Image (cartoon, rainbow, N blue to C red):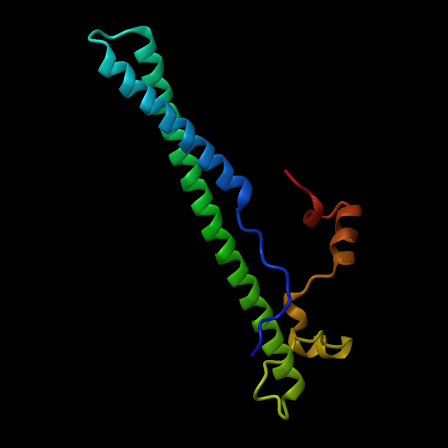
Length: 147
């Protein structure tokens, strides 16, 4: 069976990859700068602290953005599979209902019983008319009073 020409679900692509790569380039630059500063000087300077802070921050940003991109990609794939499954289920149910020769193959939709059928389902003893209750309250009977 050939794949349909339906549009593919959203998957993070070029923009997310750009920011992950940009964070990776900045992290690599900060780490190289820190390495050069450490090899050239013996004591810790303000530039080394700045380079170390930049290296750690950009590395963490790159890791977080990469993990976010991977999670979005996996979620987009799962979402596409669920949508396809729902379409398949609804199509199969539609086709089964249309092709059913007897009611034993398909669960019928519930129907609302006619007015005459309601009388046979409930006995009159467990029903109280709304009008009866309202008449008792308006006449001041015990049923309508609240304490």
